[in-house]
Length: 193
Ligand SMILES: Nc1ncnc2c1ncn2[C@@H]1O[C@H](COP(=O)(O)OP(=O)(O)OP(=O)(O)O)[C@@H](O)[C@H]1O
Image 1 (cartoon, helix red, strand yellow):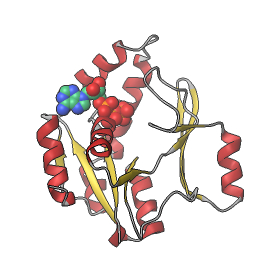
Image 2 (cartoon, rainbow, N blue to C red):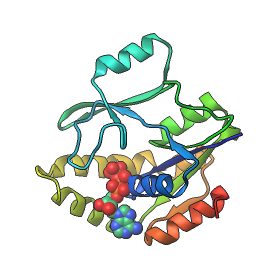
Image 3 (tube, helix red, strand yellow):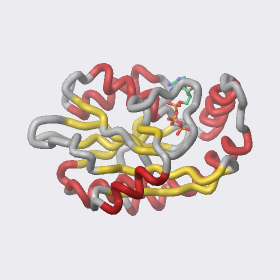
Image 4 (cartoon, rainbow, N blue to C red):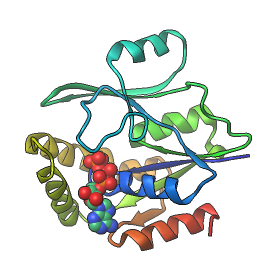
């Protein structure tokens, strides 16, 4: 039986980078791609980081009973929805999966697929270095959006507070100061090396 490895962490903690490295380095582990209505960033590729859709697509899945979880944020650029959809791509009897998202969505995925099948991979990084990386990344964008960066930075501190992590039963934290060390530690726990 396969497992779903749920990668999560605060904004700019490095979860996308780690998620992609794990995917590249673990050939038998597939991605569960989240659906989103947020605008594509310059480095985003459809179906790789997210499925970029409009709200009507998510609504169609909801009507078909295939919406596992959904969250909407009122950002400075408008409403952004993220959703996990049971689109027929998960086959736990034969494969492992990687998915990325929030603490709330982790809890819903755990409920949907069963706690024994879902393993949390919580990425940790100190606040100062995390803010530095967030600003550096934003500066590379064609139109940097520092207001949204600040909103997410502050919101995530609350969303991933120690109390909430503890309540969700997440005790293990993977420190992402050194990327290679962090990935090695995760892969060891996944039983890949
Ligand atoms: N260990 C590391 N050392 C140095 N830079 C890193 C490391 N891990 C990630 N980064 C860089 O930090 C920035 C944030 O990483 P990434 O985009 O993966 O974070 P994220 O948690 O997915 O953020 P968000 O949730 O805001 O999209 C990126 O520019 C990435 O290249």
